Length: 302
Image (cartoon, rainbow, N blue to C red; front, side, top):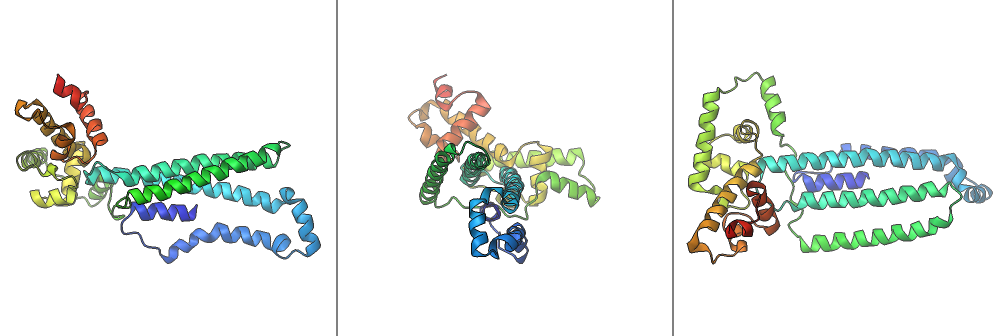
């Protein structure tokens, strides 16, 4: 679990590096082995035979299983917290609709969680009279492990750009707002905020930066000449929209204009979605239906 936790951090954070502080993750491993020293590692040959025959009854082994489960619960919660924050930061700063890293990590974590539940069930059987199910559960766990391993390899081979993370130093907008309040910086007046919102909307509408599939809030901030932090608060906090949704709204509006245009009725849905800045048909259909309650084809036909 510590290795999986570090793996998730490495994929989510583009600037992740192993540091000496990560050695603290070895503490449960060290504790478990220290517990095993007296009766297991230092056991004589005769004692080893006894341990083998009474393995399930050893307090050390039960302690090992309990420690393992506590460690698993701790790290699986941490992983889901990291994924949640990663998704929110992505939505607040990026517009690339193909957020494959998050989907990949979430799917993998869920697979691990399901597999672990089966292992937990197997461990519970070990201490009951239903040992007949033990071999069957071993086969199921082995099969799942094989399938997951093959899936990992195929997924990585088919998606070489899968492992693109965000900067770990990025803050969520609500954290930025809180830190700004702590600094006692004078908050902009409503008129100033409204003026900035109008400026950004006008620029996006006239210059269409949303046509770039990989547009980020940093790039837009440079174009409108507003500090990234201020633009992030403006869109994600004052406009109450994720940057992701803000840009996609303009993409959908442009797609609607193209679909209404009789002179462009020969364009396919695939051609239109690429033209307006999307790079995935499923993402385009999802976003389009969110704004219009219709699929692109239904909208065109109506």
